[in-house]
Image (tube, rainbow, N blue to C red; front, side, top):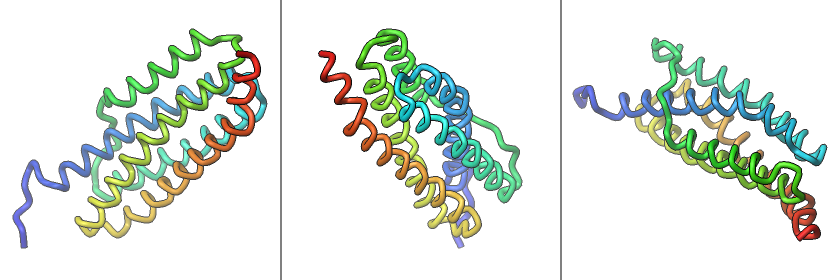
Amino acid sequence: MPMKSENGLETLFVDGLKDLYYAEKKILKTLPKLAKAAQSSQVSAAFEKHRMETEAQVERLEQIFDQLGKAARGKTCPAIDGILEEGAEILEEYEGAPALDAGLVGAAQAVEHYEMARYGTLIAWAEQLGMKDALPLLRETLKEETATDEALSALGESDANERALQAA
């Protein structure tokens, strides 16, 4: 049996959980702003739906922390901070413009892609570590993040991008 290392895969897994916990909490604060700023009721509804999903995702992460006997704490994630900052710039620079919703959808997809990559990694590590209780929780969240990304793509292609293009 391999000896546990202080800087081994389990530590890396917990650091990844902390990163995602921080990210999900930041996203949770940002989604109402995006929903309010969106011009289309469809885009606004998509952000509101994802806010509710994100609340459940935070709870799942808290369950995993609990399974590990660790306090649910975030770790500052410069990557998500940067992605959210880009979204805030779009919100500010395109406020009232026909391209706002297209920009918001694109910014939200950048967030989803980051989350999908991180959850996929945590799933692989949880499998390696034999964390059978954490796997269904992580997989459920990855499934939601993927579905949100697909919904945002469809929304952009069928509505937001077209409105931005017509106004150009």
